[in-house]
Length: 424
Image 1: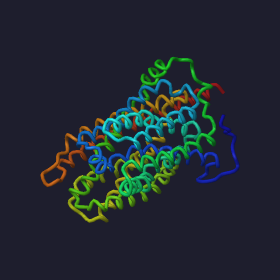
Image 2: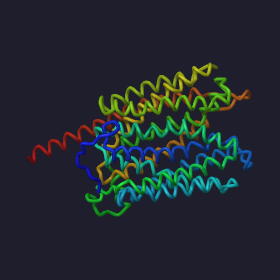
Image 3: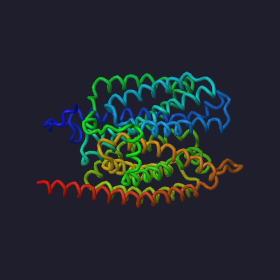
Image 4: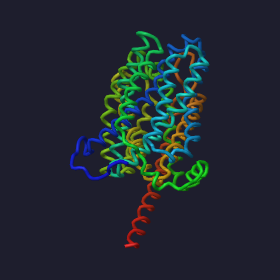
């Protein structure tokens, strides 16, 4: 059991030393999963000729992870609250590392496709377990900061992971990034296995229900649906823009291909500091106001980004940085807010379902975006602005559904406080 007794010893940002370790560990695991997911797309220029793949073959390899991760989240949801969350985390993390090793050894289209499916099955669930552990071990007034630090994994993958992965691939082979990730992943996993204490508080309150009934109870809960719909809308925006980002920057904005790592680096350097600041602001000023501010900023920047003419590299960097500030200012407060939606005994199931919804809706969104965007004879992307309009519409709708979500949370808190007052 976790020792929740107040500690006079505080370390970074008001957390105890153990809490700091937990946040760092969860951020590392999130970093490993996000990097594994993101590294495949930039390696396309090397993987396709090496394995003799067509563009559609490679697109299938990229999307296979998302769809297998979504299916895995749905299947695991019924079991997610039946075990020590630490053991569950290590089980799926082990499968994820083995899947990454398979990617590093694959030498054909079918081998790599199978490896990405296996990696998605295990890796797609890790993020939901990470959030469940963070929710169990931290109070609501700390969760903005926790989610802010965990989300820096995305920025760190841009700063460290993508440039390093491309460097390793260029100097050795496209297999090299996966093999290096396996070595680092094993080291990090051993530290987590050794230092992280069991996370079992939810088991004391768990009702004896079959996994499928537990899943049904989670799905039929009305207050969960505002969160699920918002997750779908937010992931739709990200997955529609992200796959075409590099092609749009090079072909439409006139930025040299060799400058892309610098854009990733600068954007990542800013966002790795922005995440904790946004989390701290969400804890101090309220999750929903920060979410609204981030949504408005992201809407403005998406419209600017998707309508840019050919511009200089510094302009592209500034636009990217501000766009990611808006995106982070939506994701972090929403994640912190949504942790208050499920009961402790349903957190694992709720987060696993949420992860499945995000992965599947993201995969569908990327397919839809692929049908909206067309490639002109000169290599430029056409109708990319239309994708921006869809993202803006999704963001506006998410502002409404998150408002409904907040209303439900406030109402539930008031009911609990009223019941507590009545019993005393």
